[in-house]
Image 1 (spheres, rainbow, N blue to C red):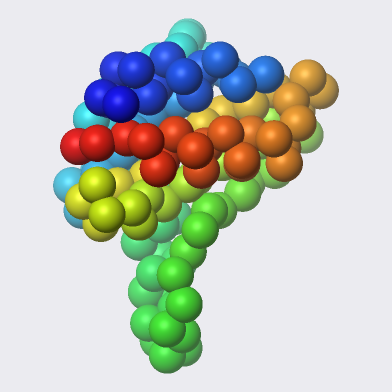
Image 2 (image 1 turned 90 degrees about the horizontal axis):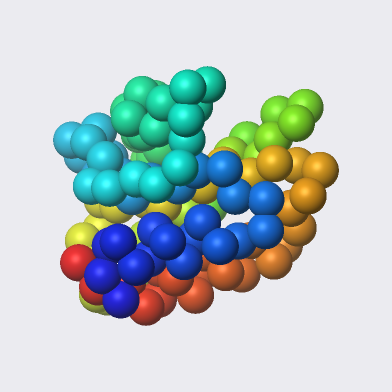
Length: 123
């Protein structure tokens, strides 16, 4: 699965508002779909890069040898899901960033679908 197909697949998740594939080394988005006037995915991608970097620093400081699967930010009306990509077919510094409308989405199902997309995505 290529980037465009993966992003379109992520947007088919119930409640999806926007999705981006982000390189947290550079802070740049490799592609995004959705968003709109109130959700600038380029800015969100750069901001969430800092969230990922910060968590990785804390884990290193604590001496944790585990890996991050995903990070969930829960807002009143939305879920912001950051799925770090650790698959063999991808570079190690990528994450999928998915914004969901909380009222119409199923968080467990969305996590499952992102995991499947991660597995099939080839960079």
